[in-house]
Length: 403
Image 1 (cartoon, rainbow, N blue to C red):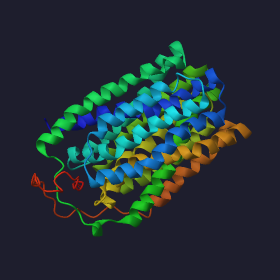
Image 2: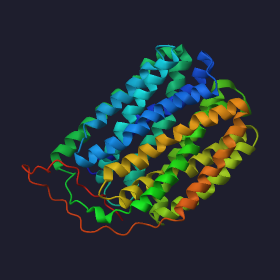
Image 3: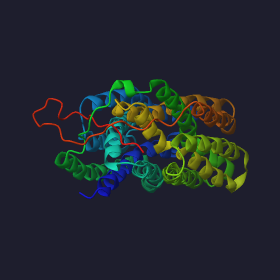
Image 4: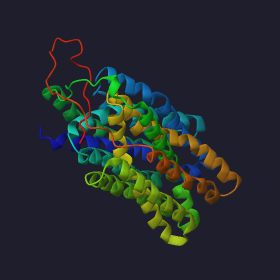
């Protein structure tokens, strides 16, 4: 298989999985309209998807550090799709919460292993990982279009049609599994725990949590906020979500490009500083100009996204799966835990007032990145295949390749 084909397939598969992360927020206007959910209720739906993912994602990271589990890629994709596909078939709030929680479980299982495999397939540099992250962002961007095309046509009862991306994503994972089994791409020398920089990894994780809070808050409520500020009903809300996710796609590509010229930590610092102004502008500007600031805020928050994943892997090289699960999944899921607080405040005051504290989150991320430094160059790396009869032959001992 050509070197760039695994990254292409992984990126497409990532898009198919993250459709279901984006679908949760995309369903919010339809749940509010068809079932009469208030701000607190719809934020509870987002919380249900995030909470289970937050709890189990570290476990999947630990498991993939102990043993390679590439079969999780197609299986977790199907689980993520099944949850969203079933969430509209029953109007019970409890059933809806259970279905989106099931989808969150699939998302949690996918990300640690996929990020580990993607880093190995990407090789040196940041372009490959930025493309992998771009795939997920494209999935987010497609979600509101898919949800609108299905649900706006026949209501929430048609959500089973949303299982189609999961079927496609599972099929895309099969050739990647065959490639891994054929060329032994996972085999590399282990890195000792002494190389881990756990204090830096902790500060990085806190910065990602702050980023997740603001981005998840915008993703959950931007559709309803746009309807209030611009008018136009659910179409205005869907447009705001599409702009949010497309801005993230641009930011993902820009982050990989900028990291090729400057170090990752510096790029993340400047991106978070720019995000402060963009989020503030989103809350202050009137009318359709809102969409411009939605795009700028999203791009600024997504420039650091793939860079934070590789930084986490480089700060914690002996636990690549755990680092991937935390930076790519767990800390992102934690952002959903703040959703009910924002929703409750919005019910008590106004949505604009409830979103205002989000301006502080990129400030905190910027402050945390000021305490970080670019990781030191890696030590010796080998790529020899372990003996087939070795007990550890199938363990994911690969250390990430750094610039």
